Length: 302
Image 1 (spheres, rainbow, N blue to C red):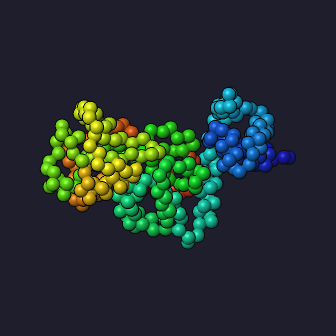
Image 2: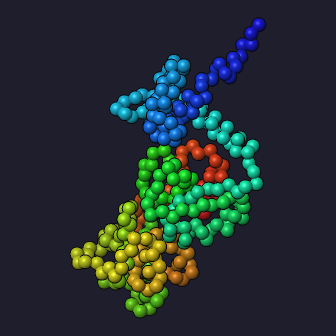
C-alpha cells in the first residue's frame, strides 16, 4: 500500500521556480528580479510561467508592463518568503564562524561624525562580534546595487523594494558659536536676516534653507539674505558656525552633541518641524540577523 503522504519532491514545484517567483513578487518587476539573480529577464518570465502552469493558477496579473500579485500569488509569496527566511537563518547559524559579521552602513557625513560614531562604543559593548563598514556618500545610493545593508536617509519615500522604518522627525533650528554671540550679541527672530548666515545647499537632495526656515516662522524678507558662506555639506556648515563664521541651520538630534559640549548654541527657541523623517532603510526581506540586530539597536538610541 502506498504511503498517502506525497514526497516533497512531488508536492513542491521547482525550487528554482520558487526563487524566481519570490524575487519577482518582491520587486513586482521581472527585470529587477533578473538583475538581482544575474540572469536574463526572459529566463525569469519563462520560469515563473512554468511555475504557474505547474500550479494551474496565475500568480501575477500582467498589465501595461506592471505586475500585480493575484490572490493565489499573495498566498504563495507569504509562504515562500517565510520559508526562505527560515532556511537562510538556519544556514547562517550552521555556517557561523568566529569571524566578525559585517554590516555595511550608509549615511551622511554629519550623521556619521556627530551621531553614529560617538555611539559605536555602546554598540560594541552589546554586540562585540559586529563589524561596521561605514560609507558616507554625497547622494542617496541604490542599496542593492552598491552592497549596502542599512542606510539612514532623510525623506518621504516611497522606496520600492526597501523596508523603511521612521527614525527621527525632521527638526531644524538656528545655531551659532558662543564666540559669535559674544561678538554680535543676542539674536532676535525679526532681525535674524541681518546676521551673517551660512547657507547649506545640497546639490543632489532637497534640504531646507534659510528662506524656507524664515517663512515657516512668519518672517517675510524681500531683500537678499546676507549669506556670507555657501557650502554643499551639512557638517561643513556646522563647523563653519563653530568657527564663528555666522549662523547655521542645524538638524536635531545631529547637533545635540555640539550643544551639550558647548561648541554650538541654539540662538532661538523656534524650530521647524517639516513632517518628514529620517528613516532606517534596508532591502526588504533581508534574512541576515546582524542587520536586524543593528537596526533594532539604532531604534533604541532614539
